[in-house]
Every structure is written in C-alpha cells, then in structure tokens.
Length: 119
Image (cartoon, rainbow, N blue to C red; front, side, top):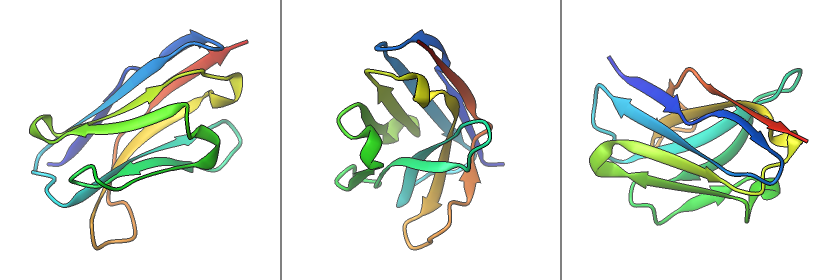
C-alpha cells in the first residue's frame, strides 16, 4: 500500500521558517514527479512546487519563488519543502503528491499537515 506522510507543520510567526517533509512508502518512486500543494480555508487547492526524479527540473508557483525550496532524497523516498520568510497568507494545509512522469494527474496524496503563520 502506497503511503505519503507529511510532517513538519506547525505554528510560526511571520518571517519565520519551517521545513516540511514527505516520506513515501509502499513502492519505489523511480521516474515519479513529487510535488507540494496547499489549501487555505475557503480556497481551492493550489500547486506550490514540483521536482523531477533527478532533481534537474523544478517548478514553483510564482508567489513562493525565492521563499520556498523543494528538494528530494531518493534514497529515503522523501521530498522536502523549505519555507522561509513565511507570511500569514501562507497559512494552509500543505499536501505532498506524486505522479508518474508520463501522467498529468497526481495519483498519490498525503493526508496533509497544517501550517499556521501568525502576524
């Protein structure tokens, strides 16, 4: 059974930092794109960042470029999201996801971790 488990969320003051982790199990994720999304209350889920298997291709939502950094450790089947200069508007539930390189839709999702940024 494939599982993605996020960790590292919590409460932080504006300007602070958090590092989210997403550990995958149940299969190998060779040639899988790993990504982070978030969903704020009353809003749709939005894409934040994605990273290819090799780490050679990375993309970000414009509003988090320069503040968030996605990375992965394939030996640990884990993807990370380093979040710096956090703002109250970054408050949301953060989800990790995975899709095979040739697929358009993300097929595996974590349960989410809450990030709350106080002003």
